[in-house]
Length: 201
Length: 201
Image (cartoon, rainbow over all chains, first blue to last red; front, side, top):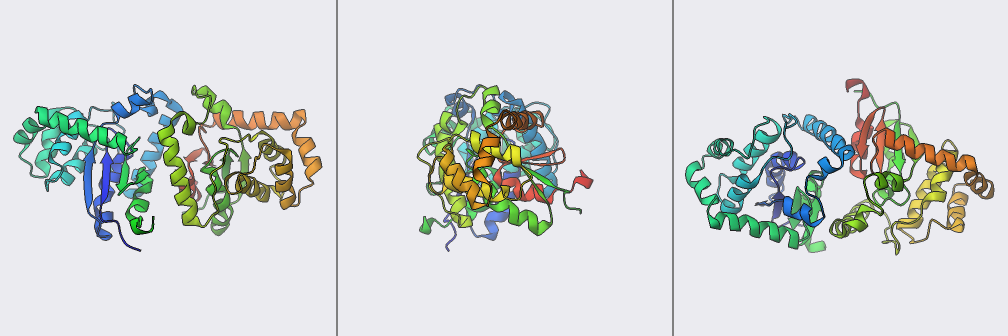
C-alpha cells in the first residue's frame, strides 16, 4: 500500500465540521508523510446552486440541532475547545481570499487553525479585519500587506477561481479531501483520505 | 466508563448507509455487551416534513454521486458485497411493518440483514412479497403468518407509531442510534454510540 502523494484539504471558514478537521489534519498527515495542500473556497455559491440561500443547518433546524450537539461531542473527544458561535454562519470572505492568494506560504496552516479557533472556540467575528489580523500575526504573516493583497482584484479572483474549481471537481460540502480525483467528504473521512491508495484505485 | 444499557438502532430499509450499519452492529454491540433494539421506520414522512418528495441523494445529484462512490469504498473496506441497486430508493413499507410488529422476535436481526443484502448486494426488489418471504425464511420466521399480520391494521399502525416516535425524538436520517436521549446519526457514528457513557453525559 502506498500513501497518497498529497491530500488537498478543501475548507470553508464558516463550516462547523471543518473546525476539527483543521486542527487534526497536519499531525495526521505528517505521521503518514503526506503533504497537505490548503484550499479555501466558499460554500455559498455551491449551496446556491442547490437552491439553498443559507446553511442547510439553518434551513433544516432538526439537523442543525443535531450538528451542534455532535460537534460538541467531537470536540470534547479531541480535547478541542468549543463554544457555539453566537452568529452562524460567519462571513468567511476575507479569510478565504487570503488562503486562495497565499496558499503556499509557511504561515498558512497556523493562520487557518487560528481562524477556526476564533470562530468556533472564541466566538469572535472572523468577518472583521482586526480578528483576521490577529490570526495572521499568530503565524508571523505580514498582516497589513497580506490583507491589502487579498482584497485586490487578483485576490478576489483567486477565491472565485478556487470555488469554481471545487464545484467542477464535485465538492459539495466542507471539509472535503481530494486525493487525485478521489473525493472524501467530512471530518470523519480524513483518515480514509490519508489512507487512500491511489495506485490501487 | 460504563457501557450503554442498550442501543436503539433506527433504520430505513431504503437507506444506503444503513446497509453497512446493519451488517456491523450485532458483532460490535456483542463485543461491548450492549443489547441492540431494532427499530424500523420510514424516512418518507420525515423527508416530506423538510419539503423533500424524494431521497436527497436523488434531489441533489452531486451529493448522490458522491454517496454511491463512498458506499462502494466503505463496503470494499468491510469486505461486504455491494451492487448499486437499479432502482433507488426501493419500497421499504412491507419489510418495515414486519420489524415494527415483531421487533422482539429472535429472527429479526437475520431478517434485517437479509433485506439489506437483497437491496444493496443482490439488486432485488425488497418491495416484492416473494423477496421479503425469502428474507423471512432465512432467519426461520413463519413467513406467511408474519406477512399477514404485518399487513393487518395493527401492523400498519405499529410502523406509523414508530415513524412518529422517530420524528419526535429528533431522528432525521438513517441509520440513527439512540442511547437514552443521545442521538447519533450515520454508519460512521456507530462506534461512538456504542462507546457513549450515559452516566457521564
